[in-house]
Length: 83
Image (spheres, one colour):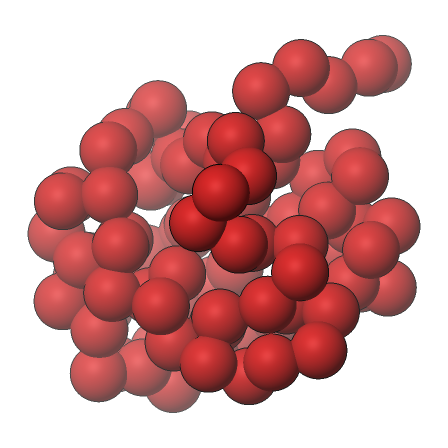
C-alpha cells in the first residue's frame, strides 16, 4: 500500500527531506518505523528506538500499534517542536 510520510523539525533536518511517499507492507506505525530503521544511515539514527519520536496518523497523535491503511498520512516528529 502507498502511504505519505512526513518528517518535522530535527527529523526533517537529519533526513534532509520533509516527506516522501512509500510503498509499504507495514500493517502498523511501528512496523513502518522498523522498515525505515532498516534503511540504515540517517534513518537509523534519527528514528532509533532509543530516541523519543512522536507519531501521528492522519493528523491524530497515535501509538505504534495503530493500523495503517492505503493513502494514510504518517508524521514523525520529536516530542517538542518549534514554530
